[in-house]
Image (cartoon, helix red, strand yellow):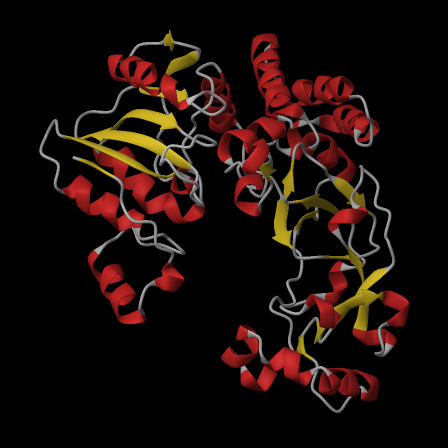
Length: 419
């Protein structure tokens, strides 16, 4: 079977039709695009030994919504080939998609032939296809074809990196816990749905002191230490729930003056009695907690320590822990080892920029704090704010107990991943 399934986001599908799709297809999950059930239906039609070759948007191979489809493929099929076409004018016209050619067979799994045409002329495609179909490591024209074991694993994002990188990551995954299993928690900052209303200069926001909080923005994260720019967010929440109107006069006037804009938001229409809420609930006690702040789209990891000064904006991810020294954890998350995990698992943006979303941060494996010892924790703390990447990596590789070969492989992979 050969095809180019339709790319249709869920919000463009009629509710009754989407409900019927969900009833019929197990792979429609979260915000899955219509092409996901097209994969499922087509795979169902394959006879033993049959093959499916689709050119399609590639976000599902890494994103959360692709999990059930990836699980289906890992359980019952062989991912024979994957050809990345990001940045290539594959359709003869400009399209808003990051395409890839995926070949899947109904047969026992084995190594996957992987190549990327990104940065190469489309004319190389014929040579690359010959190399991919051959199923052997090769160089077709100027494009390398790799054969990688273990690309698919349950519902996990596919590891489509260099062949030598995947075994290193898999070995760490087998012996070390994930970031959250090791005692950290990953969250996200507040989305308001009306930043122009809720956010402004902290001192100038016309509400009671109790109803505003200092806000950390992405622009405030320029290095390992936090420098606030004086922004603030109006806070309609306490730790226990939404603030009732009538308790704070200045806050009441503020939301009344902005009622028209606030009530237009989807969140207000969904909850009319709470029309002045922010999309995300604010927990004011987070301001005073030490935390690590990580912006989403970057060319390399920016992990900033906040000793307890601010509340994070919605495009910042937050790492907290009741057990870890956050300075030691900062060193680990600034290391090439952590970056290798994010780079291997994340969806890349235009220009090769990485996504540091919660779903990818949670993929990072870290040593258990109890296994490190006082001296190692102190060594990690000492390099947490260092500008010397080699110094950070040296300490972190020892903390992970990596062999020299694995450390060299992952550090080099991380270096190639930075933009």
